[in-house]
Image 1 (spheres, rainbow, N blue to C red):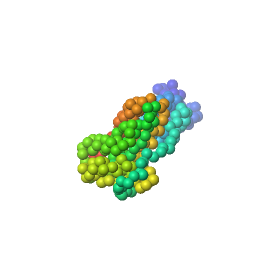
Image 2: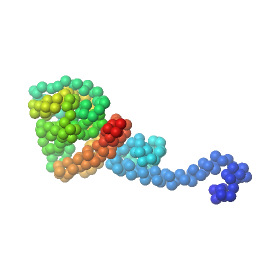
Image 3: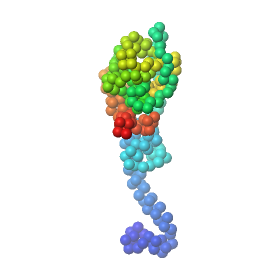
Image 4: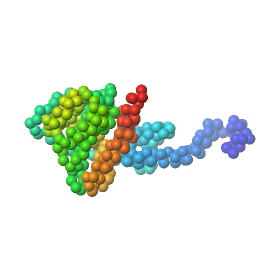
Length: 281
């Protein structure tokens, strides 16, 4: 029938051969499915590998739609199962908080309300650590809760106050010295230090601190550290040097997380794209 469509109508042929039109059209669709599936598998695997094998079927379906390929999540899940594409698993991490000190602490003004209606309204900050064969590397970050963008970061082999001062200073200058930002952290001695508190006062920033032993009081930053370690670090071999780790973490923050990674909290777009949409609205 397919080869005779130029000579005869589909209706005439289905009547003559006593077959249904729907049956014929379903057969035509099945003929094209293997080629379509092959293209879809290539696209799914490409997105999966671009995400460093971290995206599940939901994020991949969204990434496909951004490329103009419209398929439902069940289809993506089927393709991933056929190709044995499994996102990296979760791990639990230890706290780096040094809260046994006599320095004054601030109230928990954030109170787990991580929403923000505009940039530079609320920032969240914390410290984590990464093992290398040269020893520990410490990372401090500052995240804008409006877009979940990492606006400040610092890395060092020491976990002193300079680490968090450098991260906050980067955020302040990168965001063009905003004033009145609520800046939330844990009760670590670095954040309670006189120099850090002086920097907050200089820019009229409002200090907020988590309650003791309440990691959920700083959930957005904990979530970022979790993503960094699961998606970018623990799939690799142990870093030979701190320099190598610094380069890898820089790449994750600036070339992937801020600019490309789809973030569920902000509607499955990247932080940069979310802020771009806000400024163009």
